[in-house]
View 1 (tube, rainbow, N blue to C red):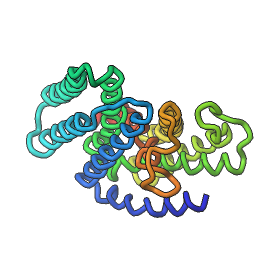
View 2 (cartoon, one colour; view 1 turned 90 degrees about the vertical axis):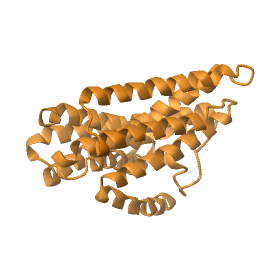
View 3 (cartoon, rainbow, N blue to C red; view 1 turned 45 degrees about the vertical axis):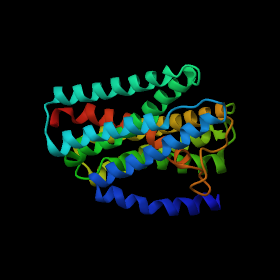
Length: 276
């Protein structure tokens, strides 16, 4: 526990980037994505699956290039922007399929793992950038705070709730240490934290949105953690990496953030669409 707390304090200064907002958040999400993909693909090597990290990096760079030109340099119409994103998806899948053309060296699993990493890590995490671009002005503060509050708040309170109160296993075949009591504590904490944050710093007219963000975020955050655990079990590894003492690698720390980002973006879109 002591190691986890110390490591959490080491990560805390990264929150300064959220305070700076805008391009700093884009840069942070981009770096986390690139590092997370490396760890994710390296995990596949342990089961003799070899996804293409270069293809994934090219795909993610194209995604952020589209963001830069559409957000900073040329305000395209929504239809053109949608076209560019659809083209990105097509090109990304196409590159993964072309990766199979060296049929003697590569298996279907190599291409499938490459696509999975691009979508699961790259596209999911990119929703934090979309949330910042779309809702930062409307919310008054960076909406990325909601993503971090739900992900980290759920993780912290689920951990301590399970540590002190846990008796009943949640998913013993996936993550033996997680408990139902811890899960409930994490979800309740996420709901309360997001509700309080919305009341203090955001438009109180949309309090229901922040309650739902906290509730759904607490649930999806744990789905993200369990999904990452499933991958690790299938890969036969304990942690994705060893970058952060007590937490493992980037993916071990940000798996719930990656999984929660799309959900929060779509909840905010539902409630704020009329103001866009």
